[in-house]
Image (cartoon, rainbow, N blue to C red):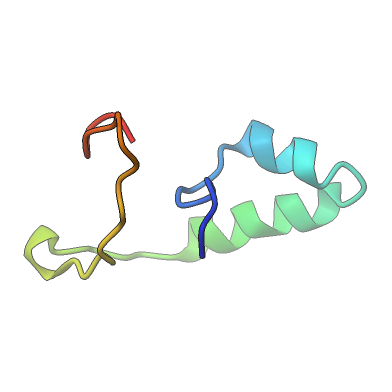
Length: 60
């Protein structure tokens, strides 16, 4: 996957992407509010990402 979508979009970004589905967006919030997840930082398994020239891991 080579694109710039490797992040969780904000509510505003999602609303702009799906303007015709406001009920679906509200449902995602309702589902998220029912979730209780504790993530252990030592347990993250993130993919290795190729960083383009001119960027550092912090700026990409």
